[in-house]
Length: 424
Ligand SMILES: [Zn+2]
Image (cartoon, rainbow, N blue to C red; front, side, top):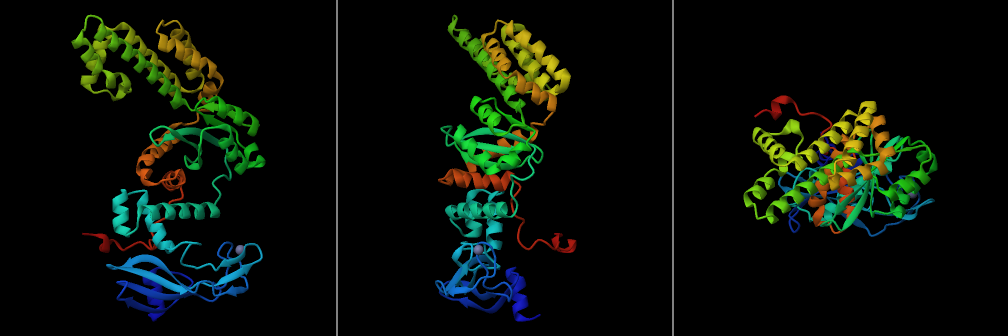
């Protein structure tokens, strides 16, 4: 194998000539002098169009690439500028790196891949980079993927949600594709103007193709959806309805508990009620034997709390049934809850009546909320992982990688390794 061919393989570069490889003693690293192969030269760094050369730019430039064995490695090349008719004077495109990247595409892809799977310190130590750099790399990888494939193309049914980050004081609007389950758009904010920016990016013709938009029942979302996507029906993300019922039940439990503590100080009762929280929360099919026992105890000692539990369960059942059966059961539930004389559930019945049309739409369309719910759960987990990033943009980019379907493969994995080499 020729020298250049061998090094091309080792460095994992394409359309690139490797002229020379040295070990830089001062740097303690391998430095490979490279250049774009004929046909890949003098292309605009932004659009890849062939352009006339402008000047030598800032001369030679270095890019961090994946370690070679146990030593760090760099690519080094001239970085001239060209005059693009569209982008003006711009640094040329390099086949081995993204525009403005100080690391090679391989290096960035591996960092992005690791960032969605490993903890912060593992990524920092393994790749020898600062967390700040990881944030910048992730943003570049996502922008590159979205430049090649627009996530707003071909949408039919989308879900809009708001997620708190930074200890609940700041919000992100997140939008997911119900058909793929992927996160397609996110921005800091929770207001009409921010959501309007999504529909600006989507454009009128793509918005007109939306058939269903689901949301959490917020008035401001409904207003924007009504004015910006004329052909879509608004549906309620049903898991929010179940969450409302769980909150109402928790309110009843707290009231009963506080009462037990106040009235003559029945400490034993208060303590037992406190221990029932999970039994009341969990879906009955997931209860342990012990928790079933606690529920039984509630049924015998506190009728009101037990009725609240049954109310929550019937509403959950209606949501799970979907279709006409679900709609009929919800009608029965509304009647029952309204007359239950349990303030939290009387109030919940009112709230559900206010949102009845979009809830029934969700039951009728049988849109699965599981995808949206799990996407949102993953983003909530990420808000903790991405805490070290200062800006919400870095958090959004991380979320796009993790649940937006744009995480790159590990570099050099196109050819599978023969099984005898992977065996122990
Ligand atoms: Zn250009």
